[in-house]
Image (cartoon, rainbow, N blue to C red):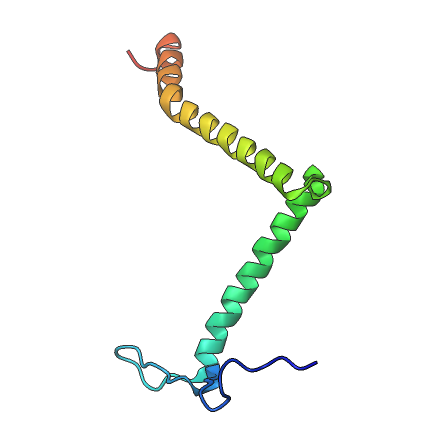
Amino acid sequence: MTVPQLMPTSLKISTNQLPLQKPEGSGEVTRRTRQASNMAFGDAWKQISWFYYQYLLVTALYMLEPWERTVFNSLLISVAAMAVYTGFVFMPQHIMAILHYFEVIQ
């Protein structure tokens, strides 16, 4: 069984046929620079994916269903956000109280 083509092959444009833009103040841009930027993005994506996979393995979230994983991650992010907020709001007061107690500042 063959899949029908939605677009004639003469209208398809491959990425190699796209015109390259020249940045300001530089000479000719080669395809190599575009490929290098795509490789950098791909490498960064692979690294992030690897960290997420490690997070799933360490926390054993890989055993949960997607909706359970979403609920757990939402709760984790909200608890972390509340901890950061509380630290920014109340830590200066506690630090000032400690400094006054030890008479570092008057």
